[in-house]
Image (cartoon, rainbow, N blue to C red; front, side, top):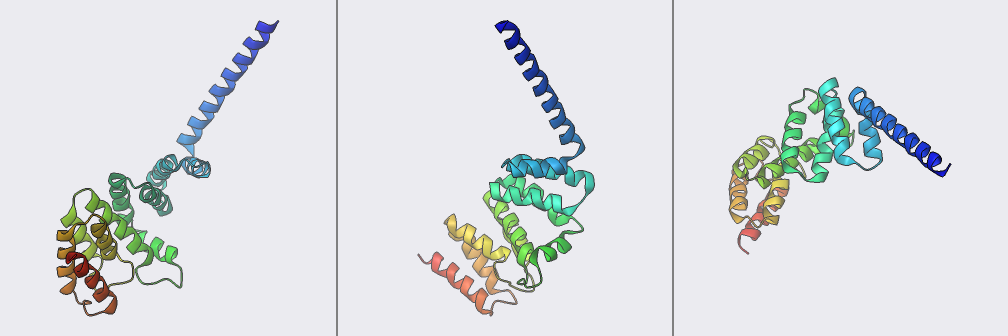
Length: 197
């Protein structure tokens, strides 16, 4: 009798496990956006980012690539950051999404500069220093908003104790149209102070 109960319980458990795995597989394939939310809720960020990316590939809705990008940034996986952010920045809805993320009272640049800065820093950390610098300056040609991609790159270079990179950024900043602005002058002063340590 005891063996029969154990055998029945084992069979029931096995069937329940198979049904759960099948349901999980079907949901993963059929509704990745639901799985994105579920895995995010239970703390599986990387799985949530993967589901978000699949949902983006299927629907083309920008909020899914934004979600995948933000998780890549939080998880500090530079190669993934570069891939996701390139796709996010190239999306036709990127500017509109950034405006919505900033809200009405936002500083100029805001969310877009946050994305640009993380992209530039990821390039820098993967050894693409010149590309990182060129990119940061390309998204700040006319103005120098607070916490922009150049500033993010400056602090990344200072953290890495990279005086050569800081000297290049300082030199390029000095030749920019906004070089006389107080905020830009403060960043140049930080770079010069670091170079003279």
